[in-house]
Image: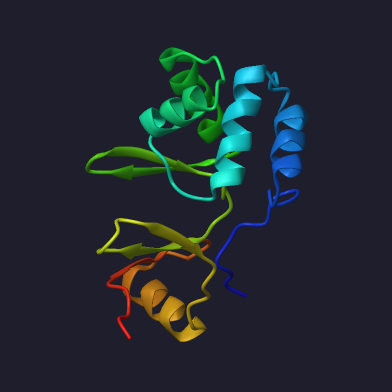
Length: 147
């Protein structure tokens, strides 16, 4: 059966899960790393490294640019957080499992969404490409509805 995500040992669904995942991987849970994870889980949006740095410092958290970039790289590389490549740079979000995005063209907001494509579409992709689909992400683009 085709699924839209690869099953991992345990999906990261909370800040506690993210912290546990780091520990299982043997990652050090430094003060700065905790600051970043707490911010991403609290804000529930996709942020650039600069936005993360600015928000943490506005909150009185003492963290440097280099520390932010190094921790984001380590967390995204180890599958704890999401890293999205955009033309304006990288954005980081708290959802790390396979999911799709709705991109609002009015606000530039990226909304995480779990969506399952019909099996017939996945089978058609496989038939046309000869590639067995094991995971997928869909990017939707649109405008907010105005009443």
